[in-house]
Length: 307
Image 1 (tube, rainbow, N blue to C red):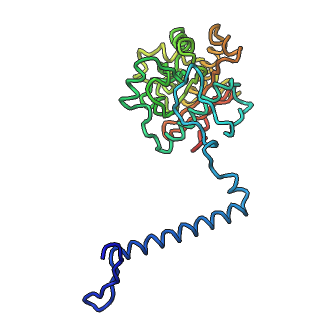
Image 2: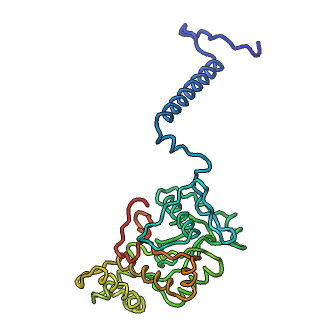
Image 3: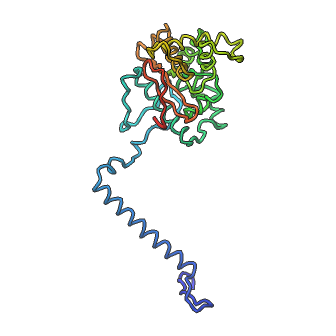
């Protein structure tokens, strides 16, 4: 009859076999028993372990999503319970708004390193939305190297970064004005000057400074001469006239020089002095995918597997 479970029937081997309904009922009962057992075990652990109690995740303790567009020039607000990592005193000071944006970018970089990038903000819908008004998170000044793609490195979408590129991060009035344009036009609170490993322009500058033969460097004297001060800054920092700067060191030194230009510049410098804008140097390792902020005057890159 309908609604009544059937008894197990005997099969050809003489043994009783469960009906599909009986098998499903037994499986559900087993799952329920295991689930209750796991809940009881977790409850006991939490009662006896302060560490687990502190680690319990609640909706209000989750960090803000990465790659969020700014609204009215404001950075994504962290939840009241979120822990804000204090600034290292060896790094440049950052206003609160710029600090929040930097944390968002570093969160995105962690996703990039771990291969967790879902391509958010790079969909047709996001592209169409950015065709109108858009509010970028930050200005990124970096090299023309094809391996250095800030939108991927920081896992953000279209319209969320103002990117200024030049070979070797060489800076002149045009690149500085481009960074200023991003700040004044879009109200971005942060400028990141991003050096990177294995920079071919920096390697070319090192060879030129040491008078090594490099057929490729012919015709690029404007680049190598512009990077010569960075080469000399590395030697000065090493306190050793015999030191032979590497390409990575020159790239970091150049980032420090550009940061200094921006912070001393009339337009951006005044915003830095008023606590409205933050300007920092950083270093990207093209192999690990990690971005690390550089301390003041740091020209020796140190990149680990995480932040």
